[in-house]
Image 1 (cartoon, rainbow, N blue to C red):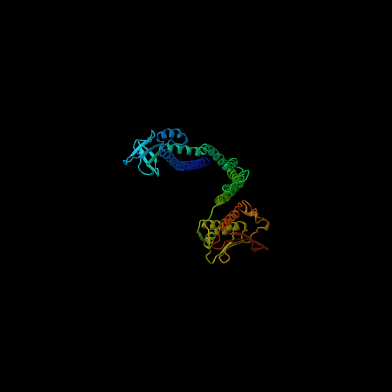
Image 2 (spheres, one colour):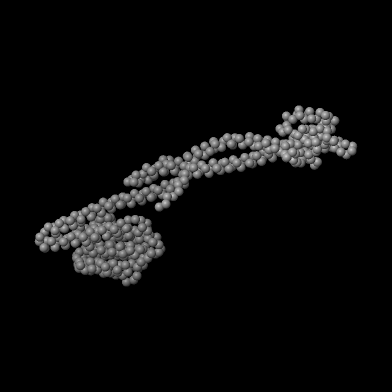
Length: 459
């Protein structure tokens, strides 16, 4: 049988949970960065507008020679350095540069009013251009986009730093929580590992079980119970079979020794006859043991299998007729109509054969055995005029190796045990009652009542 792949549920859960947390953290980082960058853009745009208004007011008052010095002195008030230009419209209609910062070129980087983005020396800049409403002055201020990105990244990092530091703590917490959640599984595994083959007790786990594990433990307990019953039954069967086989084997050995040592022809023939009789009894016992072994497993009926019980009973009676003739017994069959029942034909043959054979063995010579197949009552009845079975022994004779009242009758005490097992498999019911009258006493009638069509067989 190929070995199934094995994986650690704990590791898989840890990997999945930590992976999900890491992915969510990454998405949070992206969202935080974009949010921080958007907020920073709004703040920096407001800063550009503020700087532009301040610069334009200074230039409009005619203090343009001091603009550069004032802007440098106040540069530390802003989060990012701001580059600037100040222009004046001449009478000739041309713009003349009044002042600029070192980062600004000597030409206007943008001619569009308001916000605009342009490249300066290969770097992307964001500019804001503003004209004075009552004069001929214009100012252009700008910031490098790289600086904006850098500052937005620093803001996002500050926002995500607690989460980044807490990620290992989250992983540790997940590891502890998963370990505690899977502790019942470890407890069940330890309980299963502590079971002894000879004592299959229910799984004992301290504390409550999760709803997801409780059905598994219940199923394991049910399986262990069935296995324990099967092992106990097997032990009893082995012990009983060994006991039953030991006696006839000893008798065979004694009779064989007598036949080999005696010089009397009559004595030798008698000993050999006993040997043959013992072999026949041993053969019957072994056949019954093998049949019982085949019935021990929890065999279920094949779906849709049906057989005619009247035909099965007729075939069995024809085979056992020779046995009845040898004992001068009367064996009759009453089966006028077909009686189709759900069940394997082999099971039915074993059932009928054991009932009829049991009746022939326990009925005295010259007795009567009658087999009745009654489709109307949905039953099979085997009647005899033998000694019968007292009511207080009827349950006992259904066990293995149990014998009836006549201990002298040839048999091994397995016939009715096999019958009871097959009856249970077929979902039928076994009943004992009075049989045929003889010498002022009633014999035994064994009735098997079959379930109506469509009824589910009993387990």
